[in-house]
Length: 472
Image (cartoon, rainbow, N blue to C red; front, top):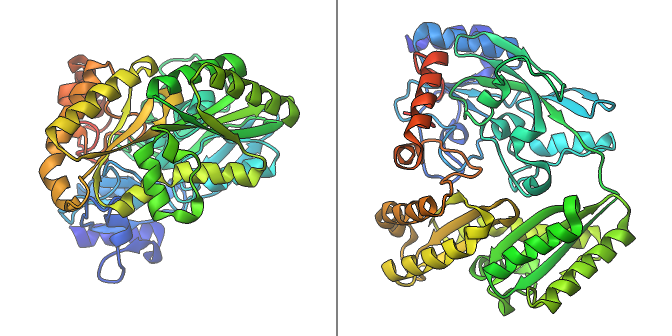
């Protein structure tokens, strides 16, 4: 059966675009970005059009094979690589990377799912417009994957998640039908919102092949500041002051713990991390202003002066150039890479009410320190929208791989229980994938889980699209 399926797929997309291990190295498609899982695919198929995607889905359905949709394969929850059975087909959307249309008057752009996020940003910029979704992996992640996981990033505070930036979708269903939903309308109240059903479904309900995205006029000025704060509560209070003073101009508000920044300083010394030695936390703020740089700078300096007077900030620097601003953001975005160089770690992508973040961290930091003496916490994230990357590193000198193997279950339970007590979520922007699917039974409302299972059963009754992800 596998030989017959591969032959059919070659007829659909061309022999050059069906990759098998007898002729190709498939490791880039079979391993997740964090090297947590290494699957075994029947093959990798790379369609070049929506019609070809639909034909591939129909062929796999006819042969009873399951499909794993894949974009840039930069996900962090093992949601886009095959299992070890050797029977699944990886459906790579990377060839579908065209910008189909830009409507300046409507402030929309229609792109194919395989477009790399950075290319979408550049296409918008070439038209004098802004597509604000921004992630550390923007040079390799794709729009299809961003939408499938409802990606967040650094500007959610102002522009929202990927869901809020999407107006319409083109989707291939598990039956191989095509939903032509590429609308650019802001208002369309004609029934259930299918867009919201597929965004965030992680390829379990349909294959996103194209999207119509919102664009924005770029700000007249964009300034970045780096501030040292004495406590996490001070950071929360600074956020409130910044929202009051800057209003919608506040487009970024990131918090970084001292140990997280020390890893960047240790592993990437040319970056020259400012102020990290003198304070337990640093904050990165961005002000996007419609009135120009002078107005933005006056606002920013007034904000920081007020924050220093109130004891919320001990020291601060404002970037004097675009290059300096990019350098500060590069430091923030380098934390995951620096942590990876330090060794394997236990990652948490959690969200909490902003007001409860200091108490959560105080309690959970202390509990982890008692339970695992010497444990190191790499705490950083998008404080402006309540999303922390609350990661746990092995004690200094301890074998990181062994720590992961022996402590991950215990650490996850401790952290997730605390998240639940503080009314948070165990997945803020990375998704569920296969890493967190078993935890949903304990941390998701049972009625919500039942509804999710009914939706999956109704749309994909044979469980052919990305089985074992999101819902069991």
